[in-house]
Picture 1 (cartoon, helix red, strand yellow):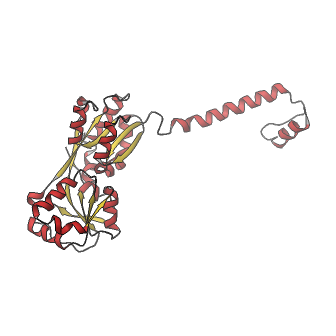
Picture 2: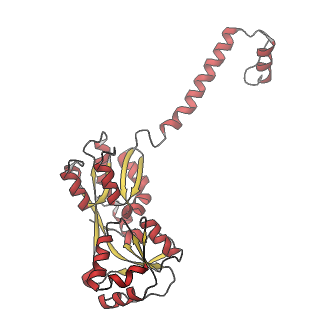
Length: 280
C-alpha cells in the first residue's frame, strides 16, 4: 500500500483499523459496506418526501383553514401524504381546465358541476362538504358598527373609511351586486381595496390598512387579529358552498375517494364548524 492510502486509513482507525496488512480486496469490502450503509440511511428520507406517492390536492382559499387543521387526519384516511395547493376557485378551475395533473379538488360546488360537465372531474366521486356565510370582519377590539339590518349595513358601508375583499374570490360578484342594489356603488368605489386573495384581504384589516373585509366566515376565522362582525343581513344574506371531487384521470382514485369520504363525513364536522363552515 502506498503512503497516501496508509495515511487515510490510519487517520480513521476507529472506523477502519489498519493492521499493516491492508489489501486491495479488503479496501473494496470496506467501501462496499460503507456504500450500502449510506444507501440504507438515505432511502427512508426519500420515501417521506411529499412528492413520493402524495395525493395532489387543489383547495379553494375558503377551505384553507380547515384543510390545514385536518391535514394529518386526511393523510391517515387516504393512507398517504397530501401535496396541497391553495388558491381562489377561479384560478384553480382554470388550472384544471388547462390540463394540470391532480388527484382531488375542493372548490365551490358550482365550479365542480361545470368541471364534471367538461369531463375534467369524475361525477361519481362528487360529495358536498359544507357552506360558509358571507360576512364582515373587522380588526379585533375595534368599535363594532351596526350591520343587523339592511338599512344599518348600508349606513355603515357609507361611513366606513375603507373596504377590502378578494379580487378573484367566489363572493366578489355577490358583494358588488349588493352595492348596486343599495345604490351606493359609486359612493364606495373610491374606498374599495381589492386584494389578491382572501389572506391578504383579512391580513390588511388585522394590520389596520383597511377598516373592514367582506368575505366568507371561513376566510375570516383563521386570521389572527380579525374578528367576525356578523353575516350580511336580510335580503343580502349569501353563502358559498364547497364540494370535493376526484380528477377524471387520477391514478390514485381509491386514496382520493377515501380523502373525500373523510372530509364529507362526521369526523371532520367539528373542525369545519370551528373554521366557519357549516357541514353539509
